[in-house]
Length: 210
Image (cartoon, rainbow, N blue to C red; front, side, top):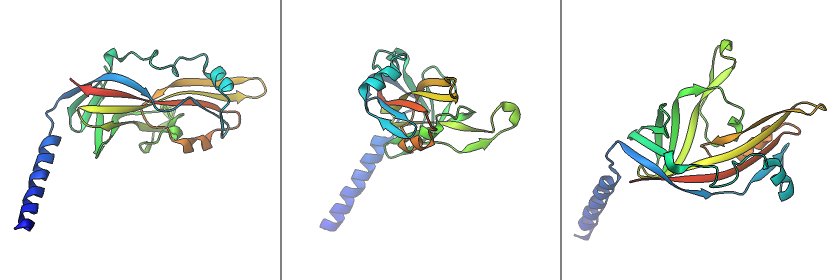
């Protein structure tokens, strides 16, 4: 009798669990709070620099590393059109949703040629060969990462600044800074060239349905 009782309880628990996970779409999540995940980290060539004076000097001309001052949460939304389709903010491009337990991977339905920071993404899509007329040899889909549920989610962000010398010793270099919605792949520092300088800071934004 106890064996059958346990079996019945298991069935009830599974039914309750399935009922709890069922969501009514569309669902709109709104940005609520920011939390810093890591301090600013600085890498020169393939080594990490921990001197705060050097770090502060390198990032002094951008405000990306100052939270929450440079971020306006008022227009931050995630719009789940279905369990496997979403858009972000006021963007119209859709992302395909791949869910694994509490991890969400969002794959864009468009391709991009901005590959400079790709080695530093924890999650990536395949490289797609394209015609030379595009100005690129390959392009790829954007991948964004979040954790939680369809009604309460933390999206992963990385603020970065990258300096790449292109003419030594004439001090000619390329500067690039911004954010990407992914996690930082520390193994990417092995792709840095001599005198390349990279600063990163990880943070999360929590999105909640009303």
